Amino acid sequence: MEDDAAVYKLTDDLAVIATVDYFTPIVKDAYMYGQIAAANALSDVYAMGGTPITAMNLVCFPGGSMNLAMLAEVLRGGADKLKEARVALVGGHSVIDPTEIKYGLSVNGIIDPRRMLTKGHLKVGDTLILTKALGCGIMNNALKGGLVDEETQAEVSRSMATLNKTASEIALEVGVSVCTDITGFGVAGHLLEMIEQTQEDVGIKIDSSSLRLFSRVEEFTRMGLIPPGDQRNRKYREGLVDFSPNVPDWKQWILFDAQTSGGLMLAVPPDKAEETLRKLHEQGVDKATIIGEVVKEPKRRIVIL
Image (tube, rainbow, N blue to C red; front, side, top):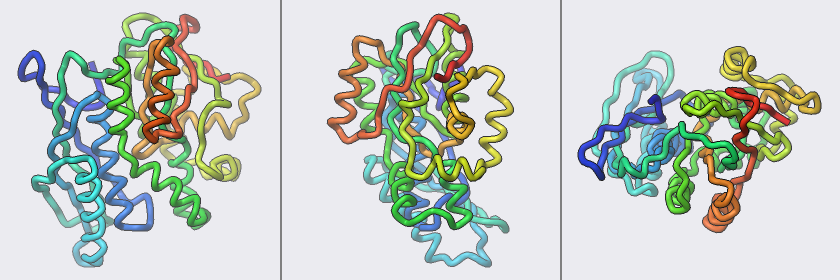
């Protein structure tokens, strides 16, 4: 099964999780960029219910043209986020890149394979909970154009830099077994992965009015600030997504928006949904919301109402 990270079983109650991720800057502040990159790299471990324990820096930077003080701020941001996650930074690797800086981490974690969260095993009636707001791909595109005010930029940056640690721990506590994080394929792409990895033929129904969005996402989407990645996502997956006529085109794009360090998508048994949502809100995951459910029909498709 293809999941969010690689898992190597050592014993019946212990397995190692391994993952890696890095990318070019998506915000102007070097320290925040480091924080976001670290949170993003850790997310795949949390998405599987694991505990990250060690990490190694991966850095590509233009040595002749980049201010090393800026590089130091990127690394400081990553290191501080690892400290918050209680993850040991144990080394790393750097290379000269003539284009622009790229930063991320290789992360190792541990997990009890008997309690592992996976993308598959959806069941009809499961409630879908998403733990973060959407739209950061579109917002980051607007940021590149100098259109985002500082307050809105800070809102998006804080979300991307927020660890999925608490949400993962609550999912395990209440007995959730199906989870993934929403990243580059957008909500539609990652939900379809969950459907495809479920042996039973199921579908998903989403209430578009329930989606939590960052400030000004509608404005920038209506302006046409759709990143190339979103366009590729839609071209690849829209044949399996049915939109109700009352869902405007700008909101349709949100389902295909590529997220960076996005939230967790939890498939929760219906009798545990309200408890899960309450615990998430009580422990600071305040953007968590119920967005839909797993349905019997239409099979292998997503319906957006």
